[in-house]
Amino acid sequence: MRVYSYEISDAHMGWTVEAYLRCHHYSSRVLTKLKKSPTGLLLNGKHTRTVDKLQTGDILRLELADEIGSEPPSDLPAEIIYDDDDLLIYDKPASMPCHPSQRHRQDTLANVFAHYCLTHQLSIPFRQVNRLDKDTTGLTVIAKNEYVSSQLNGKLEKEYLALTEGEFDKSEGMIDTPIRRLNETSTLRLPAKDGEKGAQTAHTRYQTVAYGKVDLEKYSGAVEGHTLLRVWIATGRTHQIRVHCSSIGHPLAGDDLYGGSLTLTSRQMLRCYRIRFCHPITKEWMEFSRPWEGEFVRVMEETSISESVLLPLHTENR
Image (cartoon, rainbow, N blue to C red; front, side, top):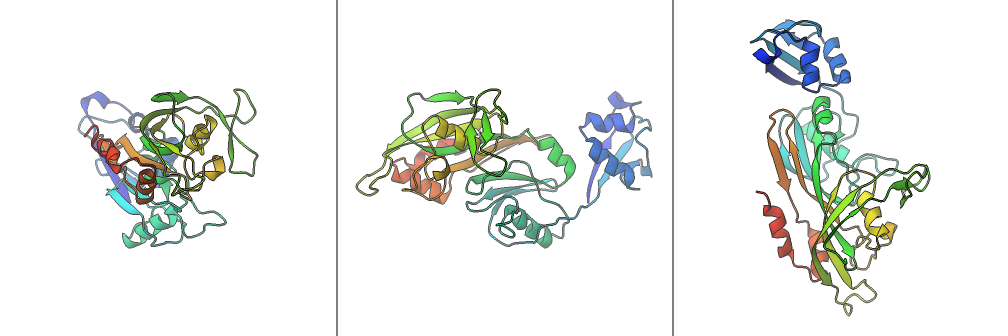
């Protein structure tokens, strides 16, 4: 159970409880749940209705009831880099899907979170704010209740690192190519034309960080040149960065689904290394940065890109 309390100011005197909560971006779904609970909405310690009026100095108390998580727990490792009463941030490892599927029943981040809930005696369903592909590593936020989830949805500022094949002819750019599914059963996404059936708009901005070359005597048949990118996405389409980089002739290293070579690594070199957001409850801006990850750094160095280029990315804006 999570409890939030609000002291009513002069500015909200005479407002209804519902108007006040909608001003704080509580959704209709959350309001319905609060109204159904006898202790969901309390005004100065007594049950209140959403149509009741507020007075200056009133204390409005909300009680968000526990909900049952449905996934079996797993103690697979996934580092927690932040944890409070409202949200949790994992540094998701590679080879770990976020949600269970037919082929992945107990090895997902949802199962890891279920184990966290078990050890902390919590009853919370898995609400992931920013989903990552199975082999994409990095920072992902889990909301601990429906209100926090709705407040953070679409409001995370995310930056990625991508190690791509080839040398870019300009230091920064924008890719605005729409994306569509290959078909209803396939996970594969394709570049699409505006107006094409199933096409979704997608916007990806990139900036080059470093360029290096592979030792072809050590890795015969490898793509020689590689470019490390910083990437920002204005839309969150499935496989967006992977499809967009491939569409301009620079697939991610290790991403054979979209044309990348497996010579240096067997998984795509993509990492969500920085997130920034306004905490829904404290209203404080929070930023977390974690550029380093073992396999990503190893492959970078095989392309003669030094790990030292990541240091300013970690300390920037801090």
